[in-house]
Length: 248
Image (cartoon, rainbow, N blue to C red; front, side, top):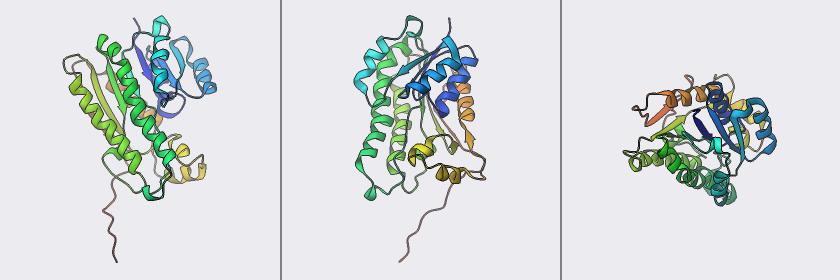
């Protein structure tokens, strides 16, 4: 019987790369997204092993009906990848608008928790796994990133706490925490500013969506008795800044 991974935010970047990786290795994939055209394109590329599911991570009331309506062959789920997420513009909080902040918290925290709760009975039944996509921002703060970093710190701690809740069930839980990876993330954060995205990743050889997908595949492929609690990775060209000191 094929194994099945449920991937949120499958229509671009890490989500799409992970779907391709798992399909290539014989898994079935349920992929969620808000953009029907991209879901259809991915479905045409990946074939019958991919089930596209229109789902907005902010619409928690839709989760139950959407999951109940999955085709029979996709009802059993072995792995949840909570990949969907975004960041508000890089404004200091005192200068920020509330609406983008609410969207980020609703997606990165509220939706992630609700969907995970809905899927846990299936994952427990299959002795499956949960992989949550956090970020190095969960550990290393930067100016303008307070809300995003806060949500990703939540994801990391939620992952560890979920392991406690699932003790004895055989379900594995991992927090994957990437540094700079060139995807659509910065384009979304800057409202489509390609120049800003290009400048951020210029001349530094960032990680790619495929790099993170390979990491997710490695975690998922480990023996069932091995759990990676958290995994932090960066491009070789990225490290840490010094302390900021205001004088005067």
